[in-house]
Length: 156
Image (cartoon, rainbow, N blue to C red; front, side):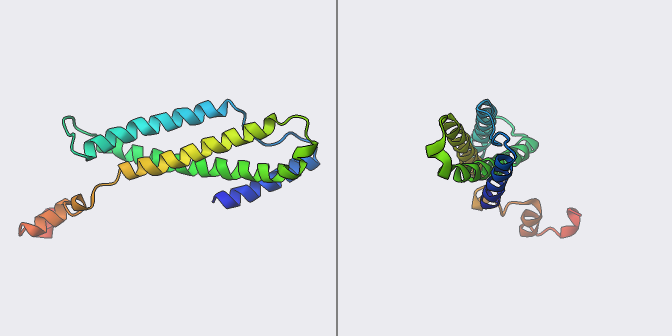
């Protein structure tokens, strides 16, 4: 997906350049939103991991755990999109860097790409926090009932 979006970013930069439009780059203020998403994902992910690792003093809402997993996956995908798009723009601009008077745009592109990498890493790590250990996956109610000699009809 990142490679496809890098190509799309490169093509979009070519088209906007030919039309004398500005580069299609996110502003630096988008880093605050990306940072907020990363922080929320870490907070929720650590809460799920703490419960998964045995600190079960409080009840963990299964819906919260599911939403945390979805947030982690969305964070990783959004990071891949942002990284790919801005990598394509940067690749397009590399041949013209020596002609530019304002190199601040390169720093802006690099910063957004770094935010994309942070989102990918956060998403992948928090997604691992939400997985049950292998020994717990056998303990679903139907399997437990079969081991105890009950039939499947009790769970239907």
